Image 1 (cartoon, protein in one colour):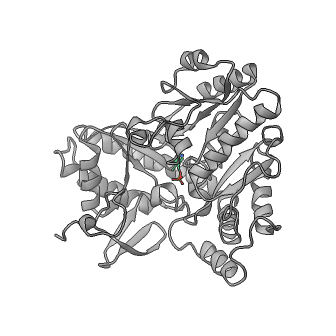
Image 2: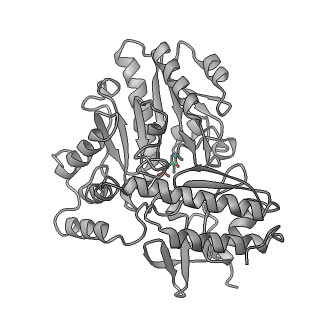
Image 3: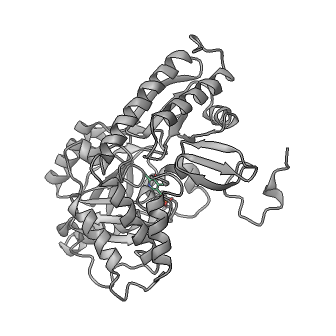
Length: 402
Ligand SMILES: *Cc1c(COP(=O)(O)O)cnc(C)c1O
């Protein structure tokens, strides 16, 4: 075994990294520096939405790289306007602001909500209601929104203006709404929190509450957006529409990009000077984002995600049945699926790695399966085989498959 690099690494030790480095990828497969193949059911934490080295994305990026990388938002960026228009045409939104990450998309969303009330003559409305188990990013404001004590400790006063309520508790939401409330912020399906969905009926109740109270509904679809759950955005499953939405991970297929989408009304107060970014919406990111949408919006693509997601979920239900001492249930939507573990999730992820299968740990002792959206049935079968093998190393299966 190689010694841990942490002691001598020139990097901040903020990540406990596995001693594996990937050199190249193709579709749902990664190849490490030793030439070994890995089945990637993590997709860079729901980022590589179209898998690795997708020819259409590679072509879009290299073509743009030969023309122009950066121009600044002091000028028109036609690729940016085009991507915004396509997002507008396919969602509730009328306006888009581009950044480079999920946290930036959330920062823009929070600022937009506060500014909306300020412009309406209610500057005291700054508070935002969030849910326990949420994850909204690592900037000071998005950490305060997420409210997780372990992430906030040691970083000075928590940014003011976030009120957290228990997950899925409508009465607690009602009780938390006051004269200073600006918005409710929720993930339709918590990713880091352990693949925990908010029921569609609950989202509809949030929408009704927001309308009755004159406050805004912000959805964090950084992880669930761009086809991950089998719809372009997860809110579509509930039949309601938000006022503001944050998206990032899957939108760039691996190139850093994030966006805040909003209605005309919610975004009207974001006038020149109120917000900005140097890199956000640059031609490279926009070229790739447009290429991702070419694929995801093509007829049949989202149906494929729903169908293959259902197949995977059925296989995982069988896996849970065979291995009751390792897994207790499967949940999630589309290709954002979670296996709740009986064994510690760290042990399960390690056992999967021993089978060269990548999954991502989440809260609530859940391992997330977030494969690229382009996987086929063979990938599902291969992943299931490797999961059965991994589980068998942790506890004897009840009904071992031959
Ligand atoms: C990953 C994630 C974020 C933060 O995105 P970054 O790009 O890491 O800043 C925010 N919200 C959700 C739901 C996420 O999954």
